[in-house]
Image 1 (cartoon, rainbow, N blue to C red):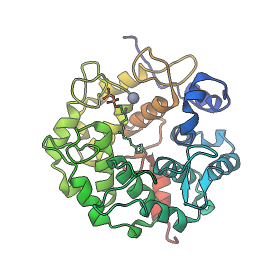
Image 2 (image 1 turned 45 degrees about the horizontal axis):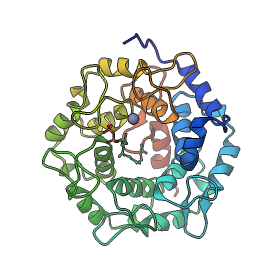
Image 3 (image 1 turned 45 degrees about the vertical axis):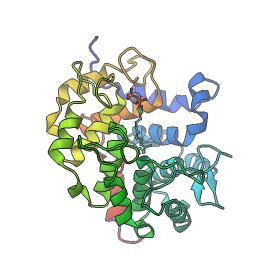
Image 4 (image 1 turned 90 degrees about the vertical axis):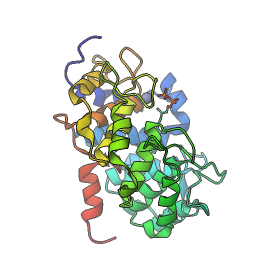
Length: 319
Ligand code: GRG
Ligand code: ZN
């Protein structure tokens, strides 16, 4: 494995700004249906690197709002695509980055999310009904950012998440589902936002999470799997929320991430020598942010937004 050196921040900014313009590229084609998530990954990375101004805010907001469905109150992944909570959170997060929540009919969007809560406290992702703890996190995170948590039954939402806790201390996608770092982030994040972290055995879960660090320094998502840059976010953010991040070897993890950079053309891949993509570029930079890497803004581990953005939302009086 080579030496990744320092973070090639300028190269990554250029990669993110130009990936949007390469509409005919293979990556753009396969990303087509998740454009709104891609916008969140790219724009958050730019903001973490102090370069949000590299894009035209009004153009971004106009495109985001063209993915909005006024009848339902949700957002689709692209213009003309069906509404889903996955894209609705991304839309709200991007509007937060630009301090433009005023572009929304906040109650309409909040009612869309609240309408997807089921009798047992769980959430469906859209009108088709798939249930997953990812959607519990998304609902709670979105409603909290909109100051509208009171529109759901928070106690039932928390009880449902707790019912997805396993004997190893982790969480799955549904009751009895295998523990996976991505689902753990969702459940811990939702419990953190609702002030319910007392439901977690911090030492037990912290142990499971820190065991995700592999020999080469990177983190995997569950036992016996390969290390992957995106778990730098899912695992580290969870460890920070339960106050056990010092159980990870940060230097080795930072080196693993830096080793996954394309230092020539920008971007970060899932593991060394693989092709870069915008998703792993975001998670690599976000992981470095959680490790207080110089020149990268600090990030909030629960809301997955830069800390200054989250502070602006919650320290402001009028809403
Ligand atoms: C705002 C950051 C943020 C997230 C929104 C969508 C969502 C909420 C969370 C997704 C959580 C999740 C389940 C992440 C895992 C994604 C992933 C890399 C899945 C791959 O799983 P496998 O089993 O691959 O295919 P492994 O790595 O286990 O081999
Ligand atoms: Zn990955």
